[in-house]
Length: 402
Ligand SMILES: Cc1ncc(COP(=O)(O)O)c(C=O)c1O
Image 1 (cartoon, rainbow, N blue to C red):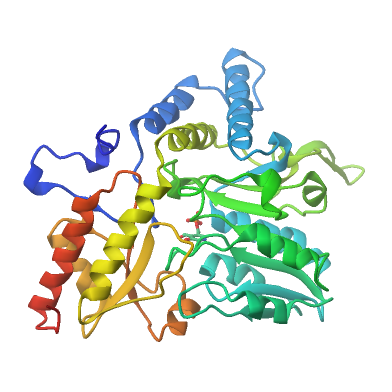
Image 2 (image 1 turned 90 degrees about the horizontal axis):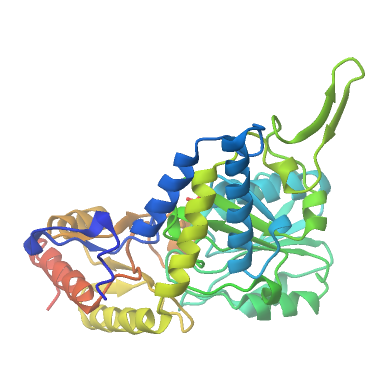
């Protein structure tokens, strides 16, 4: 089957104009079944969880079905999911809503140098809390010896990245969770940023061993403006909402000054729910489970990296052993933005810049880089076009490539 055909954004009637899309880590194109699910949810017309008429009921049921389907695809329970706008909002919810009220002077939050800004800034913002940074190895993996070094009795949160948005390295979460539980930091909350993982790896939250898992729909073939956070209900009961308002409250009595919030995730989901986002995400996870092929993706990324590693004047940022199809590189003497522009002129779409991961880039001695990230639809031809495009960049800039 042609894996590009479900994606309207990748279609072109002119083969000479074919787009080689290598920017799935920024956002994934949307396949037709997801577009259909979003359109169907919008066509329902009613307000989920609000109106007591047939359209309202249908919308409420559709939202519950989407929640069940998303939970089932992660081997989790629907009550354990809180819907948010993005992974960024999800991480802020856990940092400001759970950690903020309970952590103070002397408490420690452990983060990785491979973290995205969205999994660093919410923790750095906590007052009085010490943030310890775990280093990465030269191959771009989280340094597990360094992690063991920083874990201590005052460690209250360990916030890690499941898959790096720069190197594609996969952090072995189950093993890390076991190591934390056996350490002086046994009681710490293990928060995992899965924004880049869900599109590539099957996730079984009943076995992963973390306490909180955060994901983003628009990097997982789902719609933008939607994400979710999984945590056990006990953790949710201890979390303060980031926003309050309609739908989150059972009773509000101004005369008595009393407010009673609903139980369960609804307390943290004030405002009208994003039903198209939830329905589209459920469809995306279903579609992905049928269409993803991690072995094929690993083979492609190996071929791409081998080709780049051979090129003089191109430096790969890390080469992790456990990885998905995301990799970054620099071209000697050429700014990453120039590389991306020339590639774009040849129909190859990549991301360039600091990749929202400045601490990791600095670890590699860089301030910016070019990133290629694969999706289910990429093939060997795409990798060849990338490599040919880089050769062109080096020719244009008179670089050292061969
Ligand atoms: C590892 C990682 N975490 C978090 C995010 C933020 O995701 P969102 O766009 O859903 O806020 C990104 C986005 O690039 C990411 O790569």
